[in-house]
Image (tube, rainbow, N blue to C red):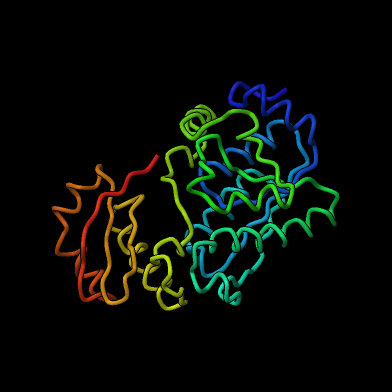
Length: 254
């Protein structure tokens, strides 16, 4: 029987869907869902897409967590920039990217006789997440959403379960750091990833470096405001490796 860290709704979901393939990012939501599937005795495999839109540190964290769960985990390479529709960064970029991802995973899940699931939760708003259209098109099930579990509940259940991902800040792919309508390049993504990783090593978390070509906008959470004030010179030294001008903003995360 699943423990108290798994809701009745999730337990019922995995009784009804005992053989699944999880699109696994390694963030708080997908990590909790992987834990719940394992706790419920589901036959679950996890697949992580690796490519220029994913920070290498996130892929490494996904590999580490899946390993700690003793779950079969596969990392497959993806190149979204090879699709002109995605690289041009138009208003449908997120949808096209998710469509490509789920097309790949659907082929794998069908070949294994598994149902395809993802970690969309009740807090995720389709109006601000155009990629959610692809879920319905490819028949992707979202157990957290179907069970009425929102982001704050994911975090609380993760804490009760002792998961190291309980307080990991919400994240999004590196492509979101590029202003819509500006073509995405591997160079711009590389600048963002290196800058954000350097700031992480200085103690920042949940921050964003918005790439604007030769300038950037650094967004930090309220909790890191004092850290930014005390280390502003060091922060700007890091950012000026890639950018000649720096603006600042506030980052709100769940």
